[in-house]
Length: 489
Image (spheres, rainbow, N blue to C red):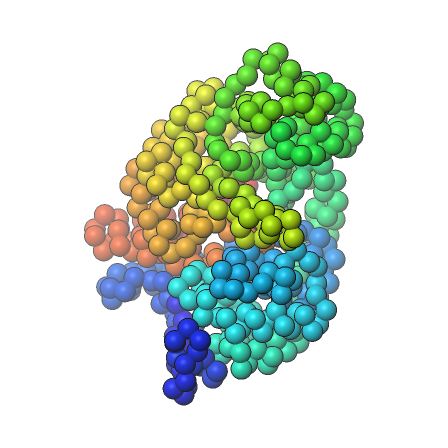
């Protein structure tokens, strides 16, 4: 990661060397193989892709910040509040989410500064995590910070970053250009009018393609609170009668077309499991009517959602939207945190998930359809080699999604590289997916992936399994060509 030289002989509260005046410099070989010969190959491979444009086909940046192009409010609202990777680690170390401003908008200056002080004073909690790598890269590359955060320098760093954020060079669009992002996908509700995307597409100042992603989860789960009201709103924006099942399906089809008209390339699904199981049309209609009347059971709601996954695949075959699956997460694991701070605040926890039997009905119908691209993600590392790679290694529609969320770390990515590539080959990978709300972490995340892929391919060259020109071509493909192919760009 970073080379650090500690000055003095004090100790921090975690027993490490004092951090008050420790300078930092990005090591050019961070994350590359330790073996000198393999590292030399990796250096050459990485140099060939280091400056290639970023393709980000799945993420959660709010497009409105690019429309408004207003200065970011403060260091805390930019670098702490939206990044639940950061807030969950601090919370695990005893820091209150409320003190970090989680679930709130921009904070008053005194509270934003206090949140920043908490981060700096607890910097040791990030050690050994990819969060530390990303954060170090953000501070050094974007803000020119050359010393490790600590309680003693928290205010000075806050002032330096806050001053930078007031400059035109650090406004959202300027950073978008500086990061070299060629394609940026957001995640959007099917009822959204997508006005922000229309504004960006019409603005000649924005050269990045910013595309919405159709995320219909809430409309496919009829046993969840508020579902009927949400579906009625969906019907209203689609100008379709959703009083019956066929109208509901039509509304979803129409909204997908609306998204495609605004540049969407994919539809994303993040349910508890990956099961796709058909219902008889009459049974699907019966459950739908019961749900609209508020009389659906949990089991019926699950059955309906599993049926709708087949409908989503059918629609993808017809309209061309790439279908991505992100199952296997127990959302909002801590109810008191959900009640106080809302969703997406760091307490979603992975669970085991199964794909082979779960997806057979879907793949039996559509797995060889020429217009279906199905990208399978997981937070259950055990299924990379056991299920996802074999599926991607047979079905032309299936691609192995990059390690996501709790697995987007060096150890898991290295495991993924071997487990999937050995079975399915490099051509069945999705390319890197950053999946982040933290705008400033995007280049650091992609750089980490490029370094790790360079190291993996360098080892294949060193073992005489690939020639170096093949490795260089493969790495460039993973960075640029593969995500464009998989997501139909």
